[in-house]
Length: 246
Image (cartoon, rainbow, N blue to C red; front, side, top):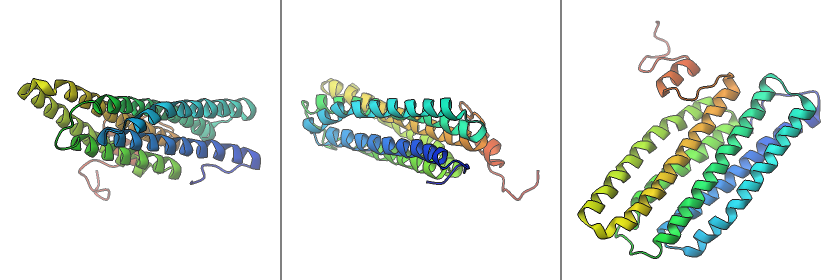
């Protein structure tokens, strides 16, 4: 991981690095939950789906532990400036990771339901494709967090827009299936809910990247467009070369 700040107190440095390491460890567990939930859905693996559901408590416990450690650092160290932003970013990030874990659990529950129904010929290819995209987004968001890389964070924000379009395509496809053959309604609805959970995971990955920008720049960039992010955070105009004068 890239260091944020260096302090005279080695113990303080160790405490800050420890919470960052714990976030990445929690993120790794959540990534695994997503992978297993999608595998359970695609392969009709009820046992794997049940395992994902049971393991959600581990993610919840990690959130509580990291949150408590952050609160202790605030009480003992009274951090300011960049250190305080780091702790705020960590607290917000673990909240999003916990919610991602909840969405992975929902996908696993859909997998258990779908395992009892007739499987489509494409073996849920649309969910697999969206799942790979979302999983990579989360991985890249965690990598950007580890390296404190706002360029990489912005790329994840861009990918979220593409993921939203992919999700919209799945919804239209499922609606078409239901209209053409009412017997597919139950299965199509479960696919829609699984895809919706994946789309929400993409939103949470974007949130994590917005916290990275907040950490580096000290600015709240939620609820603004990618064009505003490009201009305000990186100081560039979309469609304009950096060297071109105003």
